[in-house]
Image (tube, rainbow, N blue to C red; front, side, top):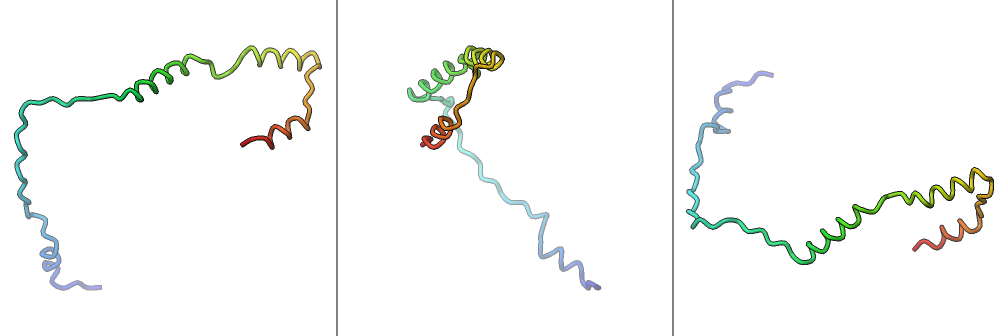
Length: 88
């Protein structure tokens, strides 16, 4: 493919044109202010309290491990199925 008059291609997309930029208005020296709502403060308190709670209840894990190792931990399949079906 041969392109004749390639210089015309450059005129279709002018790149050297400079757009004028409007000046911004002067501020009167006010600072930005951050206002946190009471609801956000409550969420922050709850989140802080929840971060103190461990993800794993070690007492329950230890109890189940001990019952499993002793051979007394039995799983009732029907009970598990009922709980699975109860999920809302």
